[in-house]
Figure (cartoon, rainbow, N blue to C red):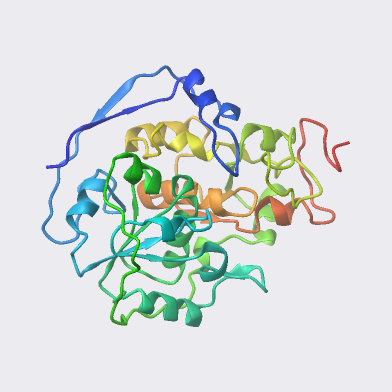
Length: 337
C-alpha cells in the first residue's frame, strides 16, 4: 500500500535555502502561502501498469516503480545531465538516454528525427504497449523533455517518476551499476505531432496580438524581468534579456514541493489559475532552451489536461531574433546596458 503523503508549500525561507543547479536559484521564486500541509491520500494497485498517484496515469511514485522493477511491460529510462551519474548508479533496469544527443539533432538544432528515435527506443526494449517511465536529475527537467519527445512521436503510455532521481536516492532505494540488456522492442515512431510544438512565427503572432494564446515564461523572475540574461553559471546564448510581450511568469519550480515531487492537482490548478492560466485558451510554454519549459508542459498538458505546447526555440531563439518585440522591465536589453 502506498503511504499517504503530505506535501508542503515552501515558505520563503525554505525557498531561499535550496539551490537549483545549472538553472536558477529557488530564492528567485516567490510562491505564495505559508508552509501548510496538503494531505493527498493515494492508494496503490500493483496489478498491471496502472499507478494510483492522483495524476491520471502519467506520474508514478517510487513505491509503484519499485514494485514494477521486474515487470516486463515496464521499461525505465534515465535522462540525466551530470556526466557519469548514470554509470555511478541508476535505478535497476534503467536504460540511459543522453539528452543532448539521443533526444536532439545537434546539427540542425532540432529534436531527434523519427527514424533515429525508433532505433534508440527499440534498443531500450520498448514495444507498442510498453509503459515507459522516465526519470532524471534536476527535478526531471530533461526527463520531461524526453516525455515531450515521446508524445510528439505518438508513444501511448509515458510517465514520470515523481521526484525523479534525487527523491529515489534520498529515499535510500536500490541503485544498480550494470546497464540492462533488452531484447529489441517493436515500437515505431509515428509522424511527429506538431500541435505539441510552437515555432517562432507562432509566438510572434501572439506577441503581436494576431493570435489568441497564453504564453507562459517559466524562467526565474530575474530572467523574466531582464535583471539577468541567464542563470548564474549558465551560458547566456541570447544577446537581449527580458521576455516575450504578453507572457505571464510562472517559474517552473512552483509546481514542485521541496522534495522535488509534484504538488497536488488542486494546488497546481490554483497556481496557474492565479496567473490567468486555466486551460480555456491554448498555451505555449518557453524558457531558455526548452528543458525547463518541458517540465511545465508536462504539468499543464499531462497532469492538468490543458492544451499546451513547448516553444523549444525559447528565449535563445527569440532573444536573438532581429526585429521582434520584447519587454524588459529591468532595462538591460543589450549587452547588460
